[in-house]
Image 1 (cartoon, one colour):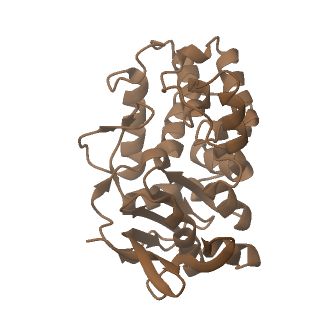
Image 2 (cartoon, helix red, strand yellow):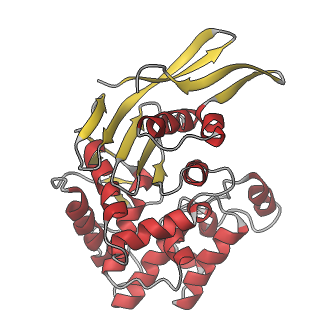
Amino acid sequence: MSVELVEVVRSGFRECVHRGSVVVLDADGTPTLELGEVHGPIFPRSTNKPMQALALLRNGFDPVDDDELAVATASHFGEPDHIALVRRLLDRYGFAPTDLACPPDLPFEDRARAAALTGSGPSPLYMNCSGKHAAMLATCAINDWPRTGYLDVEHPLQQAVLATIADVTGEPETDLGIDGCGLPIVPVSLVNLARAFAGFTTAETGTAPRRIADAVRANPRVISGTKGPDLLAMAATPGLFCKIGADGVHAGALPDGRAFAYKIDDGHDRARMPLTLAILRGLGVDWTDEHTDLAATAVLGGDARVGVIRAIPGVL
């Protein structure tokens, strides 16, 4: 059973709550906090992206810099710098935006979205997973794998991804889902998701997992965008490596291997930052005013602050 984790308080009245499940690990991988169901499988959604990127590196993907590696793990906001990186990857391997098998979309960030609406309109380039798809196409080209049909679970690329996620998480083989971008999605328990993230930050310098963690930490804007949760959390917390997933998933790890993963039952984004910051506080990160500001989101009544969205006191 999930538990109450985040509350919305308006004018002193508890207006609603967000339930979910959380696991927090010590540096040796031992759970120090288990709330709700942390051993059963969930769909990690885009929180799987670092593991998918690891599969690409293991199969020859050769980004020219950390920006390209970061965009391969990104849920980007479709801003101009994001699109430039995706185009760079496509161009180098002879692909066009129409080769991307992710669905057409508009940018998430408001200004970029407005520009697209008055310009080219929806495009696979703007879809938040286009960096991952471009990197997958590059890996197909490098290995002389079929450049079409790479979404299919039987495609050599997806077989490599499934093998990598099984290796990193230790999860037993189970039924797959289909993610929002059309790719197979591998169910993973929260406890093994957190352990996988810890493996990225504690890996030896220069190894493929550590390259991914270092690229993401050096380029948190690339994997998210203006005011994105991952950008804000990593900018406030040196050494943190984290990645959100759709419908209320988040996982992260500190350099020493302390890690967390959670799933918000109703998938509401407003619960993310208060919960992530409460977890980080419990992990003992050096707390700053920036953390304090992120930990409690204002509830407005007109233009006035009349309440707060916060982790429920005493739960974490």
